[in-house]
Length: 363
Image (cartoon, rainbow, N blue to C red; front, side):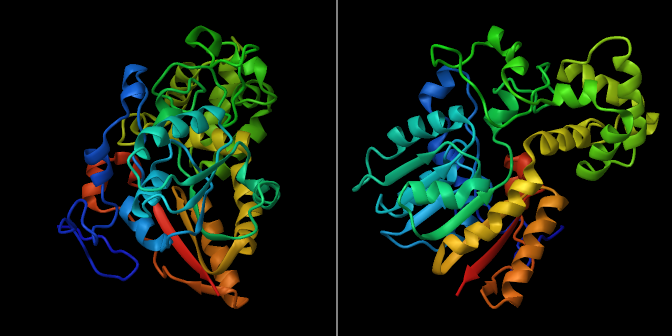
């Protein structure tokens, strides 16, 4: 049996009990809560918080403190923080997606109704690269713990209609931010097709308007795909016949561009290209590079910075920043090795399989 190691270096294997205090990445949340009723009715998918038990342990929050969730999503991590604190907590939730904030708000209304005290929840519809400015505007001078969960939510992948997944036929948008129609309501399924024209810059623009060399560079740099040049060449050749506007069309082009042996492996051949396009469109790596130093400045003495990344480019940025902070004697790294999901969590939530969590404590 393969054993996975957490930051203390002890193999847990399958012995980590689901929902136990020592079980890294417990998924008791899913079984205890399940999807919210109103979202089931609307066929929304409730995101399963990754490494939930580990996050709660590593945040090390106390009642009355301030917690900043820089990737709010459906609010799963923040919800459990509030429950653990019996509502005696201030939660600041960042998300660039207006729909995510709306979903989190609805989830919180249900989850917090039986708490002894209602948590003070502050929603911020902004990019976390503007962390300091946004917190200042809300009168938040210091935070006791800050969390970044850099993964996509289940809703963004399955329900947003913005083309994050190659498993659905959607317009090639891939932006985290979203716009409403003139009445302020959510866009309907039919309206989603026209959304690419509502935002400034989309994946469709890159695929159809950038030259082959630049497309190859993006796939190679952000997707780390060894077939980047073949994929770029295939895209440019295909778009000569017609404009590429949907995820299904792009995924098929990529599949036909790679060598035969790479078409039917465990990982879909379009996976890395879609990752690369999403990173480029949302300027994710630069945003992360800008926000981590701000988070350190915003932390109070003894406060903790917790970051969950999902690919090597993000993890490298976080690892290097934490090393730099420690060298500058700003605090200490609490995870010499990243905390990873247990086999149980990966079985229940396959999207957690690539998660790595690093923790830094300010002094």
